[in-house]
Length: 167
Image (tube, helix red, strand yellow):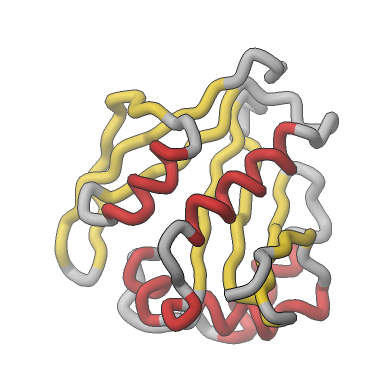
């Protein structure tokens, strides 16, 4: 894999985003048993361009979109929650950590996002995502919830990254 490039998603990137969302591992960790419906996900995708309280960053290597980080501001405006995914066939060691690191820098430098912390919910079984958040300075809040993935219950823990320069 050559250099990883981050950029803000554009409306014409939808098919690349859809391909990632249909990747079997992304379907599984999103808590679904089947890939998303093309038109339904497209409606959700279009919301990224109509709401300044959320965003979608895409990651390219060799001129192909291989991953994403999306984020949204909580209702109370104090937190930004992130989620991320990548094409399984393009995943290399450290890819998720690098994507999250670049996304954090983007979020922290966006003056319109005045929040106290960045959060992410991670399944106890998703070791790669746990490593991503820990390597990027997140700490467990101790808050947990049970979600069903593939017919099995998973415990998710909330992780938070607070920075002195927030809000």
